[in-house]
Length: 286
DNA sequence: TTCAATGTTTAGAC
DNA sequence: GGTCTAAACATTGA
Image (cartoon, rainbow, N blue to C red; front, side):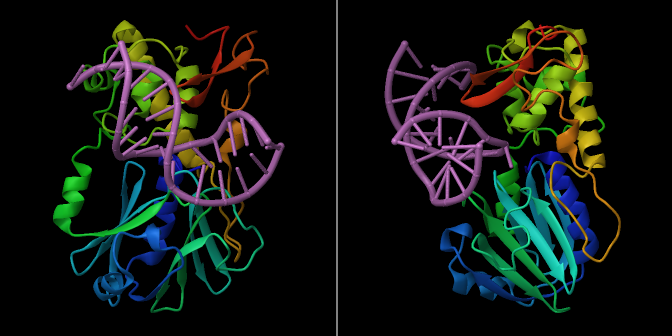
């Protein structure tokens, strides 16, 4: 479930393993997954060395030594799997094609590296994409992205300030607006609002300073906690480096409609907000 | 068969 | 321009 924590998790794993590798080949199984013709794609990509793996919001960036950038967005069901011999690193969408061989029917793009390892981009719904961009194109693409919620200067006042120009917006929808704050998706928006006891359909202009503070710190807390548990992603190292956590079991409201709230005697309700399933407790969220 | 699903973008209405 | 809704992208699974 690729929101910020899942992206952060796979980025950390890939940074440890991909840095320094040279891209030797790239196979394309779904044309629309990339932004170039395969010919141009290969021409600019093959022979390039990966110098760094990082993220901005939910987007994954592989810096290449030739100066270009390979940007990956997993959207809802994208998944990255890096394989070297018996070692497997899985990030993004929780397992599709578990136990299957690679590539599988959901594989869209495949890279092979000079050490024999491979990177698979799999995506059930085909919403995800990979784009090879120049530095200028990358900079332009990132101009409309909002503040990073885990950055030091993100707090109640900052959150209130960046949402200032959409006073009538419902707070949950405002949290999902990537041009204001990046990284928060449907699940963590519900979780953060539950933790800060704020109803998802409250208006931005209506929130008090104390609530902004509670909300901003809830966002940080939820994201950090999820990263600690490696997100809701399925991830495992087949060569044995220990069991990996799963944040799904730590969710407090998402997916719990009809069940009792963990905080009060209320019942968790579900309704549609901006077309998205929205969970909240009628007992303690105001 | 119908509906909902982790994300964004776009079009249209008010 | 702000805000809301629906639709689009495409597929799976309940």
